[in-house]
Image (cartoon, rainbow, N blue to C red; front, side, top):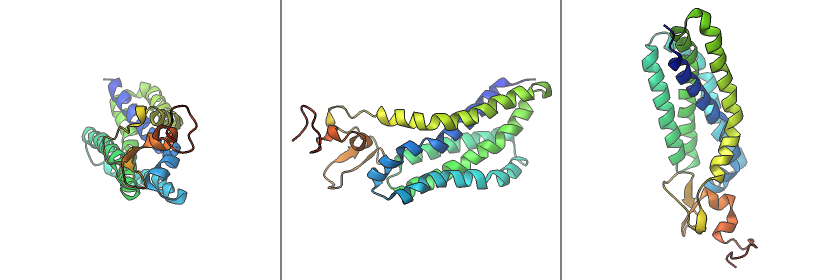
Length: 205
């Protein structure tokens, strides 16, 4: 019996894992301002995801051969989602790197699971089509990631100069003076917080 919903679920999981591999690239300059770290330190935000995603693929593939595929897939998806939430709430670069490492590990588990899942859900004569769908969604996620990251940063609501801080993570931090919280939008749009260099009408002197 063909179960195309399994292929859809596996493809979406691969898509999201690929998106998270590249989505942070466009946010690195902003993260540097928020965490006040050097560009070389920011490289670990990318490396912490890609290193486990590659290094753990083979051992996790061996582990997948010994467990139930459905349970392992649920573990991978839930773990990846939880690690993504922790990344958004990380209060420091170190914790963000640790959470990205977890994210990459669960991304490797997703990658190790998709082919066995597809093989078990699709009849042999339809496997080529199923593999093509999953194979296309992976690179698509890597291409979409930077653009999606830019849209998310640009869509943050900082209207009226009042930062919308909903957590302690990289989307909300303290100004260098420690007087008030500032959001990522303050770093993207300094005119909204009344910087001296702002020449727009109505800006603070």
